[in-house]
Image 1 (tube, rainbow, N blue to C red):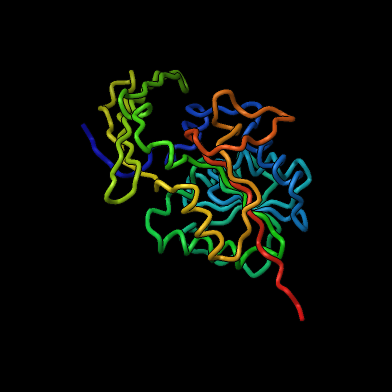
Image 2: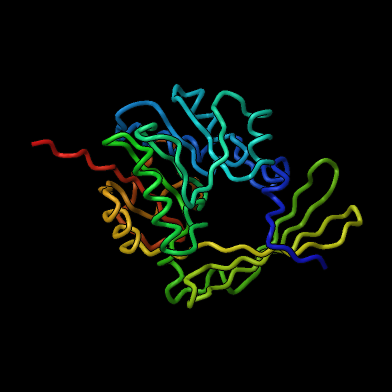
Length: 268
């Protein structure tokens, strides 16, 4: 079996969209709803970790001036070809410089923020967001909730198996999650098999386990005021978010949903 720390889905954007279909664009519509309710100072949006570009394109067609940013050249090429409209740029979420006060909102979906595994990486992301946002700008993020794994094994005890077909080939992914308490990481071990005769591939990746109060502390330290921090409903909750749904008052579920505003400087 081949073993890799690379991301098979990141390297194959069309496969990613086949594995995680979102025909109703729930993720982008949820982000758009957050922007509408909390009111950024303008329409310039940075989709950080934009992936295939489908959410960036939806926000663009909804009237926002969107830039999609990702570290994967394969994802960016796919986004430009299949989801045109936004500008697409290569950027590392651990630290990027796309200009000062260039955006009115930063959107960071699908646990992209949790690829900041260390405090320095998270500080780098938030400092970059602070630099990129206009005063009063919003940070909208959706991710796994570290607090969910305190004493719970719901997502750890049984591997998750998903089957789907893409371009005539049947794929199966078997995913096992484990908690690395020392590193404060949720580690993911995924084995890919296909019926085309190719050998199985084992893929390793991880997300930072961030707890709600910890996240509030980092945001406050970087000049953000938390407007909403809750466990649902959202694009990856069960049931998923629907138009008109209001945020819960809890942070107990397996997802965290965040809206924070960059403070407006006080002038004498």
